[in-house]
Image (cartoon, rainbow, N blue to C red):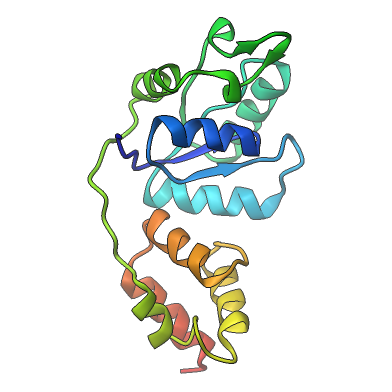
Length: 181
């Protein structure tokens, strides 16, 4: 399975499942048009560090989301699936597309293929007090806010650190600030 460097943005949970059946990638959902500043901040960081590809449904709402994200996160790439390839009965959506159609859409968007690379490990999280300790959850909240990664458990935090292309130096600097050094 091909690994995509960029963060792929889709509308919903079923879209995430469909994309992950086609490629190995970090996929985030907008949950329709109800996303807010937190998602935009995360996507701006991802665009700077790894790049972002928008893969929304080929319908009115998908196009509305795509245009809004393009305005708020300059430089993002766009992947398109033709309506006839995203149909299942009356339902139009990425979740209905076959893995090959998703892969081809991402390739046309000039997605960057890469080898899996892991910068951070569970050992790093424990060393920084972000996992396994009594204050780990609070420390992750603070660091997640400082790095625009949001709040999550240690396993998801580790995935996000590796997925968003954040440097070890940046994490260590933010951890020092949290520690008041």
